Image (spheres, protein in one colour):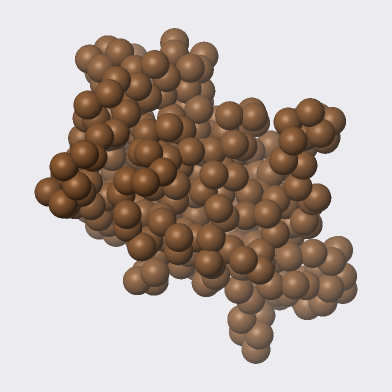
Length: 330
Ligand SMILES: [Zn+2]
């Protein structure tokens, strides 16, 4: 059983970017899918109330893992968002179904849909916004791919931009949705909109969608007057504008890793070097450095216990940014 791949699509009067929104790349994260549904309703309402409304480009929203979404699971056989590689896609496309994982089928179908939309619409370029949520509360942030276009879109969403994840994790959508795999300029950016089941998460994801589409020139500044579009600016006020990943606490099932329960950490909570963060079979797990905690693991499935990030001074000017880019994107 699987849910529908296509959540919806709308084409603007002006030709431009193909903007692909992914919800539920992890099946247990419905916020992105709900946000896409809210977006299409908002666009339709805008047409009704604002006769001058036009936009540039085509918006398509897809579910990532349709089979996992049907049973509200993160994945069926393999974590789809750690599985994206040209080799895995080629394997999925050339083998018979009985030899494939459930996520091979998902990848094969997604890539076929992407190619179909690119061939039909012939966009100027492709932007992929992959929407996720976390098990912990309070985390709204974007993860850019390793290029300036992606960073610019990430900054345009008005939430903390976290660098360094892409080199720590493998097989995420950011690793696959890029120019060389689609034969057209393709930029991906990932957005985390809060806790999995929080009623706030779809609203923040919608805000990210609108801000991102505006940043790439799809919506005009004056259109789509939804209150949600300022939600992120308000929410991100006290958070770092840009930060980098400095520590990943990787875990295996035999570690018996569990977060401390007498103090529940939220995303972006300040932690001090030497502070007890969790416990495992060897005893207390201490923070190896000071910083801000990100994505502490409060669910059973997962291979990362927690992350530590540190704020970096934002260099908005392109030339200044170039100077520090090398140290971030290696
Ligand atoms: Zn996710």
